[in-house]
Length: 180
Image (tube, rainbow, N blue to C red; front, side, top):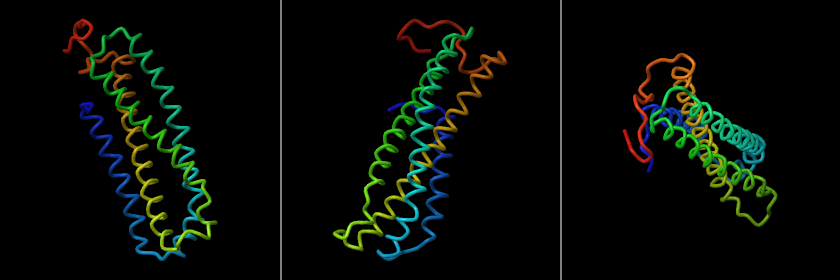
């Protein structure tokens, strides 16, 4: 398990709050019947598919930009502490998880379940709640990644661009495998 910095913890709390707000809005819909759920699934699937597409594209872009961030980090005049690279690893890990889950959900949501005559109508409400729950988790996860990335970018601006004395800047160069 990766030890999270206070910045990453705050970002995860931000994602959790976003997921809770979205989930609360969904929860206010109340209990729905199978027929209502079937119609709601039909109307919400295009939006959920767009959400999955957006998260896949954003995640892939963020992973590519993390490589640029690592290039800037290693090319910096300042020697950065291990914590900086752990923060970047945490972003990459969460972003990759979001990428994979969004692709899988995109494929699952493209199965034409509302066209099936074999599926009992009572299952539609469960499927509906599951899709809303999963899309809420995806949204909260993406908010967390963006907040974590924001914190990392701000730190890099302070270190590289402004030359500020920052807690992530090392005073000396540690040996490989040596922790500060």
